[in-house]
Length: 423
Ligand code: PLP
Image (cartoon, rainbow, N blue to C red):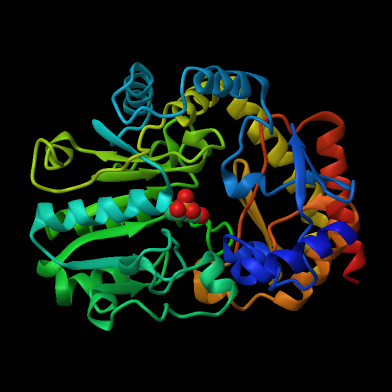
């Protein structure tokens, strides 16, 4: 880890904390992060020559395996034709058509460059469409690093125990109401008081930023019906779950259709691309058709679009079967050790979290009862054994459809060995 350590020292002099996104700094688990030199299929390789089975997958962005040949070729061919034109392209239309065909709620879609942008613009659109200002978000859900949603956020914000963020004006933070996940009564209660002023509820249908926490049966349906009753919009943030848990995302898996959906990560095939879309009557309010402004120099970037299309083309029925089979294998292998150590395991398809508490949490308050010190020990043991996990209890693990055979066995062996190490 010598080169990584030296790079971290250099980085800290010129980049705050040495990283370009806080969670990468390993503050929650101690030590310093390996600097990555390259990645291929299920492995990442650091600058010191160590190989790791990758269970982070760039926080869920990679699903077809690292350096997937079809994705790389599509991106390279696009780049050779010019990296950006700031003008419409055929590829954008084709990608939008694929998104509309697969995601039940999306009749029209706009491409943007990050999940943060997607949720920011979905919120603005919801406020404009309803003429209301209040937003309801879920405690522990993370929707990106913008002002309206950096309240009660999970992910890196939770990892560092920051309740909101300095720099977010109090009057703006005050427009965001926070309720617990999986609590339909709390949602009904907040609507009973503020319903007529609530523009939208935004949530991750499967929470991934407090660790992986699936919705309880009936929860999403209840939120859908409450929002409809009060004329508020429902926004599913499927930046993590879109195209990962099913071809149509979590909304297809659970059969609940929101008004607007945010996508990111998988849709860009590992490149900076995200999207938001939904009912045509709402999306038609965006400029240049309507008055709600939204735009971006690199939106629909041709290289990212090519990578996204090449990824989605590979996500057929077989791919989802492979993802589920690998998830099941990991779950079956870990369950006995979880029972022995008093831990719990939570999974939907290819996203999962091992929680250092006896029962799988249903919300962020319960997730925070996990033994994060023990998690750190487990994390370091896994890393030493060649398995790269998310460096926080409050992040989900992700793997690719290529995780099969020896690589899958190595992942399972490494995780089981790390659990032995926490004894
Ligand atoms: N929404 C969810 C559910 C996320 O998990 C994330 C990032 O992890 C975002 C939004 C923000 O996406 P980005 O980091 O691309 O801005």
